[in-house]
View 1 (cartoon, helix red, strand yellow):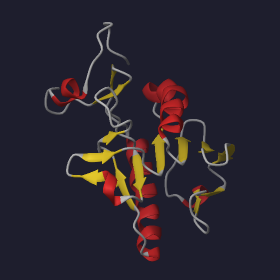
View 2 (cartoon, rainbow, N blue to C red; view 1 turned 180 degrees about the horizontal axis):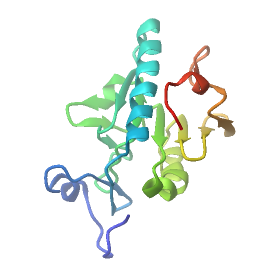
View 3 (spheres, rainbow, N blue to C red; view 1 turned 90 degrees about the vertical axis):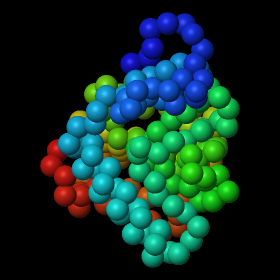
Length: 182
């Protein structure tokens, strides 16, 4: 849910929030984040583990970083997001504060309170910032939408499908094998 006033906020405002309060900043507007539910966290752990195991087996430069993890998406003072899962292959974007610039791959796991944000606002923000691939994992609808910014292709998959990660040649996530009850 966005903040109620018309003020333009900055990262300083995000950093001065009370301990434990989470929010994102998109184009100077603050969007407060609700606590995630069990299914959200279960999917976050399962997907992060699968991706991390793949990345470790390949030995490349990419890292998977689950939320909460700061992404300064436009390298400005008015945009700060915490994607559920970020995969970053350019280590020069990383420092102790987070990622400065667009991750290569972002996954957002939809919660009822984040639906509009994940499907619309973040889709535009991520694609325009240079995120190569954006997945929207929607457990309520049993859907996985895959947006490939490089090819401008959109895949609409289900939790019965094996979904290919477009930024890798040989990496698929078989959602039917995830030990998560929907």
